[in-house]
Image 1 (cartoon, helix red, strand yellow):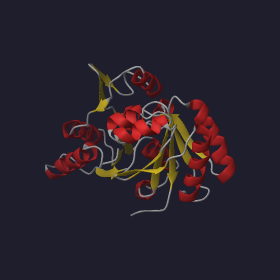
Image 2 (tube, one colour):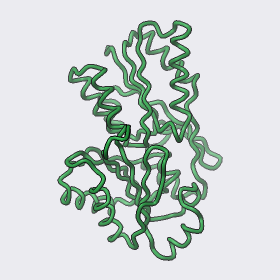
Image 3 (cartoon, one colour):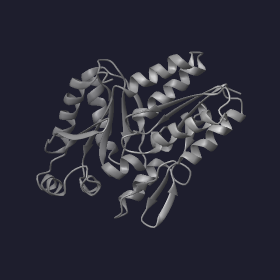
Image 4 (cartoon, helix red, strand yellow):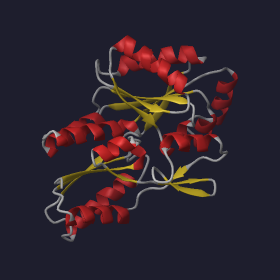
Length: 289
């Protein structure tokens, strides 16, 4: 039995293989799509969920993980003799899930249920593989014998510098979600614009409006290269646009020499905002905090 545990939510989009290999405890979001409630990762995979979104006129809605569920999970850790619990969660600016985890840990400490167990509740300030990747890397470091404090510092450094870019091939979901204004989306579709959307902390903005797929891929390569710390890994959240994703991966690797750190299908959170046809790129930029 390990004396530490890593907990996250299903928005981290890590593979089932990594989840099981490193014993990462994933708490599932409940997702509503039309009249159907789906337990993310339990009832459906990320890729299959994207296909389900593509076939639906509705936007998926993700419910937060409640304080009660966190208290149950944390009490189970205490009773199992876990000494250190690292909890890395979806961007607190976009979900109350992080705040609920903080409240749960505080409640356990206040009434003595926490015992000697230490809780590290981390706001990733990002989405999907932006926190899924450092979670897996943290698990590897702990398995190799690094201290919990050192691993937490590594995760916080990544969270303080991660940048997410979405290059959208279809603007329907971005228009519905409000990420792009309806009028701008209609004009963009007419002009074959493939906007590059930057998401950092709680700030979302369009940073480029290239026309056509080839030009958009080239512009995303150049823009991301200007922002990323040299030689740091980049991550790709898979959509259904695999041909364009593969083209981007090869061009970015050739241009920058950066390694591909992780690639995996995204789930409901990114799908709700970006749709099903996009390039989802995560890089390590300059530290912000």
